[in-house]
Image 1 (cartoon, rainbow, N blue to C red):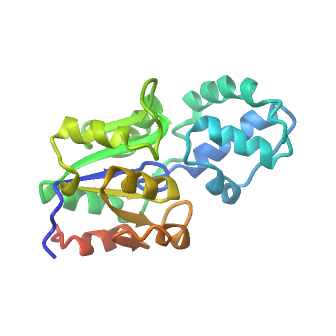
Image 2 (image 1 turned 60 degrees about the vertical axis):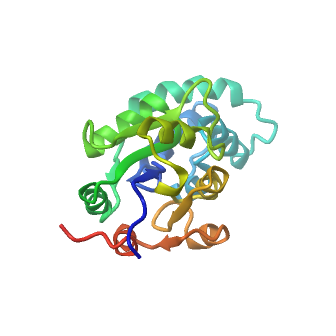
Length: 224
């Protein structure tokens, strides 16, 4: 197949960057203030992905706060601590930089759509890949519904002048697969991320890949 895509929109956490160390570390610092936790990274992989409010809600519930007595108090604490620790032990997934470079060499636009707060999303991406590497980065902000709402996809498409048929979406969770479906985009599931193959295959994406360079082969992107 000749690559029909002029753009790829990526999820951030669990797709282009392994952020689980930072997410777990920060969440446990918050929980500790209420005498709760700690949660393991394995547990956190099932919790994250739908914004920090849902992340704290799920974390508190897992730790026994079924009434969510600490939820509202926890949110500003999390925001403060995540500003300080969002770059903690970030690392790109093996092969991801080569995939991105091969996409860029083929003339594809690269964008990031994340439910992470916008400023933290930009900071995280630029810390790993450098300023200006991606054509567009969009995170959680006032007035923009979170994924799986397709509003963020539409904003990116408009900014980059890309149609749905020219745009591929890549992510590692059911939230990402539903985002692609809602926006009418072909999807690739990143099984190297937080959730794994079974969750992704349930949504019948174009491809579920175990490593980033499988996506390069699927798109027939030439080696650099």
